[in-house]
Length: 187
Image 1 (cartoon, helix red, strand yellow):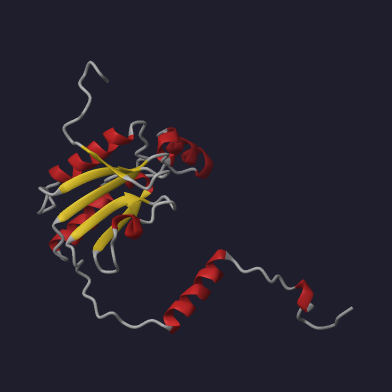
Image 2 (cartoon, rainbow, N blue to C red):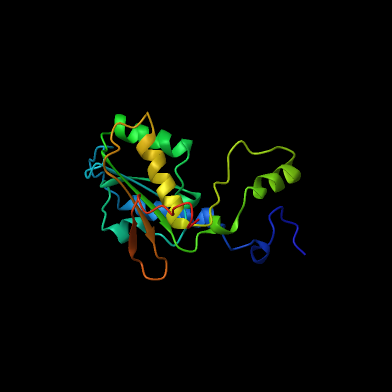
């Protein structure tokens, strides 16, 4: 039996949290870090809006380097008011001109509904102010996102807006034609 105020070494958990591991990785990174002397303005003058899905390595998939683009990520890659806010700052203050939208196959938002908000309200006693923005047709949601960007009064540059679906099994992008919306008799 120990009388120490500190538990025995074998009783101290040796596993660190994920955040601890990230902080340790940052310390290793910072030990070799050299300020690249970059400006906050993206070299390629492009903003990429994409899903937060952990399977998307956007820089590798698009051949981008540090400093090439602004990257805005959220659930589904959906263009929400906050995405418009970020794009507006990106364009007006930091001189981007092009917008690339990337959704992906197998997105978690395809299996959710707005009922998710109701369930949260029942659990926590407060209804979220935000919409889930769930969707069933990824192509159509990309078209909707392109339309939201193109019609925003806050954005200066809406002529170079392109949307894609990233295939998580092949790594390939498939471009979505904004004019290929299904007709009323196809829907």
